[in-house]
Image (cartoon, rainbow, N blue to C red; front, side):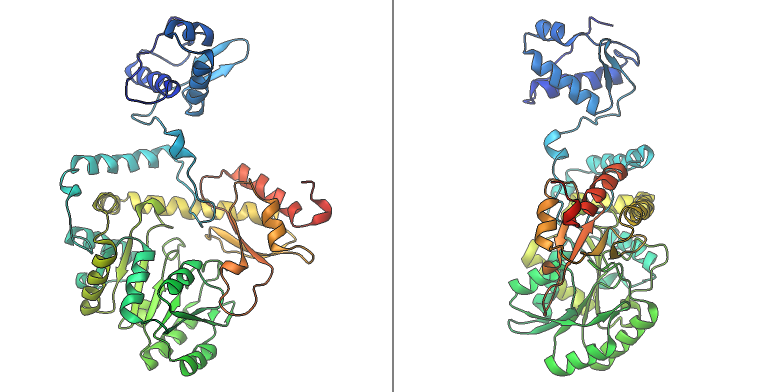
Amino acid sequence: MTDWLPTLSNNGKPRYLAIADAIATDIRAGSLAPGDRLPPQRRLAASLGIDFTTVSRAYSEAQARGLVDSQVGRGTFITGTAPADQSADPLREGEEDLSMNMPPEPTDPALLEKMREGMGYVSANLIPLLRYQSAVGSEKDKIAASTWLSLRGMVPRLERIAVTPGAHPTMLAILSILTNPGDTVLCENITYPGIRNLAARMRVRLEGIAMDADGILPDALEAAIRAHGPRALYLNPTLQNPTTLTMPTARRLEVSAILNRHGLPLIEDDAYGFIPAKAPAPLAVSAPDLTWHIGGLAKCIGAGLRLAYTVAPSGKDAYALAQALRAISVMPSPLPMALTTRWVEDGTADRIRRFIRQESAARQKVAAEVLDGFEFTAAENAFNIWLRLPKGSGRADVIARMAGRHIGIMPSDAFTVGGTPDEHVRVCLGGSITRDALQSGLLFLSHAMVPDTYMG
């Protein structure tokens, strides 16, 4: 077919996107079939009365979507079928914050189609979801949260569960309940930057606790409680960000015993706890009356949902959390909350979680092979490695050399609480990057860390 002429929509999109959309529409309608040849670019441009470059860009966009294949000297041919309503917005495609520790993105067509089915459910219930709702989720949403939390061995009463708008607002709300300006909160001496930022906003002092390969040291925790009279302890005990360490069960029980003895509240950030197949039980199981357990969904389903399943120490504490969250954010967004509830109910969320588990393990293998000989800590299902730079290599220089590469790197300065940052960087392996691109980027990093081999 060389006489195809698209019907262009008048929806304000650029012409090149309208042409690519028309190709997808006609494939779905059967007007274009695999093997059909599209008109030469100059001929189509003349027929539509537009610039040749617009058509060229449209064909490139269609090829990027997997709709066509351009062969030099032969032309542009339809390659297959177009998924329903899947025209990509190139402005959205380019939005990715590489400074964040992101999970690998699902690529399995069957899983993606299942995820889109959930969007159809949300669309069918659109109007009710545009109304103001509970600050901590409906009973239906809490039941889904309870189902999800059971994957971590937790069975809290619904009155203790809150569906919250992501881990950050939740931690902010909890800090507003537990602390006043000038108070001290304990944490790992290498910790998640988010708690550092929130503490600074709340004018709360963070005190870092020394760690070993199993997490914070019990003796150091005891000493810090006696010395500082803290209001709470913050921990990220499973696949800790950035060190990737997981606190084993024995250490969790030691820490829980100390918390119970002193009556010290715990903010347990369990962002990564749902990823490993056999992660230790949360500290909330051994210190339930003191623990604010935050089961964020950003790492185990998707950051764009901005939701967390939070368990308060008691129903009274859950009420206080609801009041604090109402002041901060009014309510979790009903649209992503409904989508998440649907995905939990029909098993899609668990399929996403399993994909992330499998793909993160594969990416860790890539990192282990490429960076063999360098010193770093890693874990099978972590989204990053914690890399010690070789002698003579500085954080700032390495990060500058890696500028423009599709790998997020952050220096140890962002994670250190007390003391002087050492020459470590967090190297992220997740996000939209492919395994081949990751391998290439890490190979570049291996040279960037050794000045004598860096070619610029």
